Length: 131
Image (cartoon, rainbow, N blue to C red; front, side, top):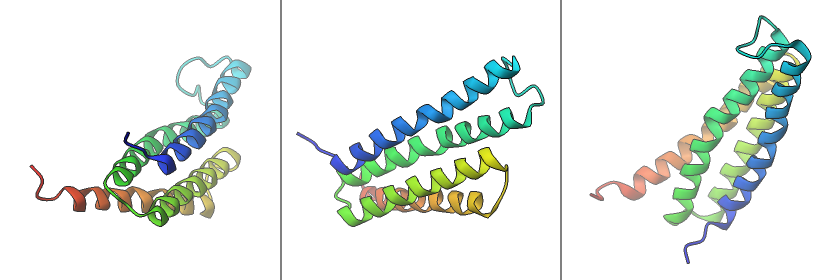
């Protein structure tokens, strides 16, 4: 049996974290009556972008993390990347929803890009020459 226990843990965490981001958008839509796009509502727009950015970045990092774990990445790398992604996504979403912009949002993106790059490079290094 092929096993990716560290990645599986992070997949579970990120799946659960997706729920409040989705609910916040739906709740705001219900309060404002805006069914499509943002209707010019800045709060809805910020919530949509927090949800959208999460949805745009988390899956690819988790896929690259899973591939890294399957190809023998050390546990420390998987844990460091998973925690970096988690902290980064929490920081980014929180500041985006609350204020729209701020240093924690930028740091959150950097903490997201680090595992994206790290796991991507790991996968490329493990597959170079394989064809």
